[in-house]
Length: 237
Image 1 (cartoon, rainbow, N blue to C red):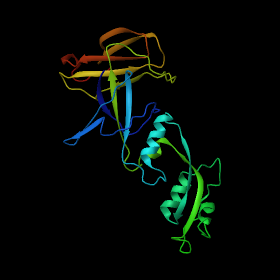
Image 2: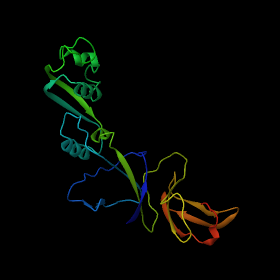
Image 3: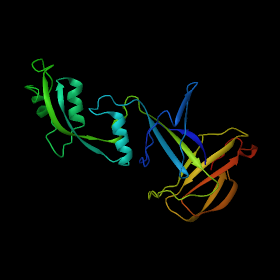
Image 4: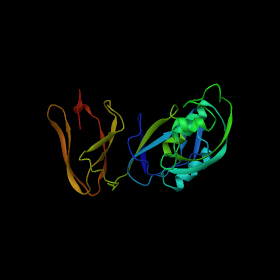
């Protein structure tokens, strides 16, 4: 399987596979990260990375393993322990509180420290209280939101593939670059909202430069072509 990187700024697709990164499948050398990952299908893979969220009340490495086992589904965990009244702790208890099983209001949680209001005040700051409550952790909570980054990898082969169909009536064209220079090879992945069909592939300027009918047994196919002088000054697919 071959592939190329395509930078993105946010995740827009459901994460179907979770890969824990550790010293057995990645290498950091000269500031570059190389990742050993077997791509099962032709398509766009979005990798999300960043520092672990330090505000969670549970061990993040253990949570990561649970998410892998649960295929990314939300995790409900019971927390029991003694905590000091603190702004960050209060926010953590409120933000990850499982509202389906308990009162998650700031006032209710703050009162367990003896606070008279819905916030940490001087009267209760530093006091300890024992909490026993359910926390709801989502996959996106594992990574600190301030350090979260994304990159995508476009994988492709010589044959069309059948990935999960997104019934949005849109043809998605994913190119390696936004624009290409003369002499470069353009690599483009096209994802269709249906499986099995025929598409008309054209390269156009003021008129049609090249055209081709392509049979697509699956719903994803890859196209590679050379950018030559017939494309000058601009051409589009």
